[in-house]
Length: 392
Image 1 (cartoon, rainbow, N blue to C red):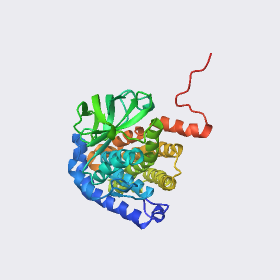
Image 2 (cartoon, rainbow, N blue to C red):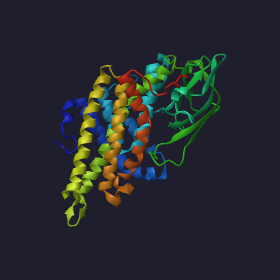
Image 3 (tube, helix red, strand yellow):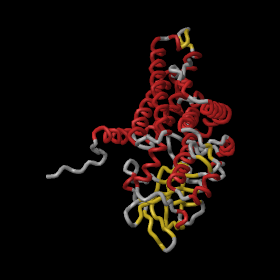
Image 4 (tube, rainbow, N blue to C red):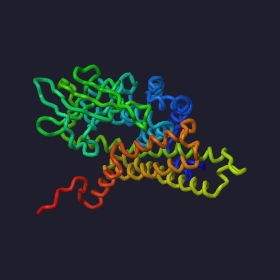
């Protein structure tokens, strides 16, 4: 038993899953943690890490073939957890590329599109982005206003996107747009396409080391070969979001773990009134409650991944985990910052960054309120997300 595995969850993993977790954990300790604070403070993306991340051979997660690792859903969750345990910005870069972008192409793309993009993306010779959110449409992404009209053999895109991770340097950005028939389609926009302008957002107080972009699409021409044939309506986009959302629950767990471990270590080393902080009842109470939340999150994540592996994951299941874990991780990180006292706001102690980044995790891929309403719809059979006005 360890301070981060009180229920011996490690025994529920197979050897391959442990190897992936331990290899990534060692990589993060060696390559990410020593340098990330400086990048975070300067709001710069650590491009130097990309070729080293490629060497890990983890991009593509559960995708089989095309040079992807074909790992289990649990292993993919552990990858998300370990990235976030080290740093939320790097976790976001990898999650956008490996989960959202690559899974969209795998699930909704043609065989030619998979052959063209997935091997290169698995090697990180090509980086992907996922362009759904718009300036006026976040939680109500189903109302997106970016338009796609047919013009001969091409499609022409016009509109705006916001918060699009990796888009300023990605080789391919999946743009979701409303067609003339009113339904939503997916379009692979390649780097250098005229009319596509992605500018890095500034002024963020969370995930500062990952570049997210405002996108302007002005008459962007996309050939028919770059249209995702498996996307006929928004429900198809939602399918991608469901199968990737479970990894966000793992990411919340990772942030909580990183902050908890830092607080536990600090409590053992920091002395006040002649004793280590860990010797005081109030600190032990906080650590115990943090450990309880982390243990519950671990077990829920493992069950969630098993359901995904079996093809039984539903949107309500994924939303329940994201809702629960984001809230619990937020509380764990806040307690960690409190245990560190004034030192908790210094980047060098690796809690302040988690504390700030957790605010983004709490919101992205569905806010707490929206996740709760997805679960509520499953429980009651009534959608309250956008209720119709009362008649009369």
